[in-house]
Length: 501
Image (cartoon, helix red, strand yellow):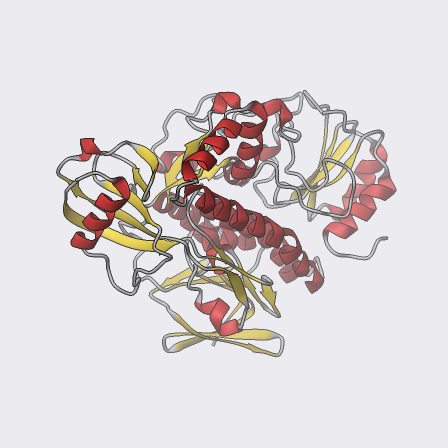
């Protein structure tokens, strides 16, 4: 039986990013994927088109993968900062990026990175699979997992006729996660209000439909392009039998009903259904089995936060599990994964539920939608919504009342032109010492295998003397005045779940 430090189940973006993070930590990693081929029309554009938020873009930049992702996404010119074409939407109501007050967002500094970009699942997976291969990660496709059994200090995973041993297993295998079910995780939440459909086909009269997201008195539809790429929301309580493929006749009936337009869907090339069922695992860890991405939480695709939420899970778990495998941290560090990421997932599920409530047809719907539209057109409303959608307002409770601790690190740039993203490609954390304090340098020496020490004045240090940044870009300690060596040591120990020295 082949043995690995970690078996990751699922070779989607979340599983592959997690595998890359573990590979950076030196872990032996096997990725098992049910699908035999990586190529699928559901992963390529237009069906596989997805939006990446600011926090996800920053994650790729920290690992030196953003140039490859931009190229794979067909984005050739990325010179200089720019506002996003749109700042996101809430219940189909677009946010105007000009209404977003960047100065009101927590600790944001000017950056050359985008706040938003369109890509595809295929582009993301291609880049991550290539990086995983460089790091020695093994990916086995056509390997559907049928059994997961925790035995002593390890886990045995069976896929087909083969069994694999692992110290840890992570289920990144989607909303119908086999790992979650086999390992006995509780999965709780709310039942669906609607059945949604995604269609790629041919409309005889596409001009009859409005472009974009369109709530109607009978549901909602989305015309994503004039090439027959459509989305629909039918508020039927999730009654459609999703074990059956939707027929052209059924899709045309739903489209005419929810759009209120006598439009003809003459051909269907690809179609699938989904619901707004919102569920979350009560914990993301059961012994030596963990969950990430849609395996840990599912919700409607409204707002496009599912992929970004899963990538955030992978970044949070990756360095922690890597530190445990490497022997740098006790197993108890993994409990902070649920503690930090479960509230983030719960907020996204509620954000999704709120959008469904606003879009639900009824006599009061226009009044509610008008109220939300007015609020989102204000500076405060647009800024609040953008902070939630982009993830930049997320703050973990790390037990400190310092306002920067638990937040994503600002885009610090040193006076020599070095940016934080230039320092984190190897997966280590970074201690930024803006005052070049000798005592702090000496103290950091014993952590050099885990933390990179960088001294130098910043173009804008926001009044901080030193900042300790975890591998996932989260600040875990900051000094406002002259850095305190003892405080740094306590923060570093807490980072790895070690007793204070």
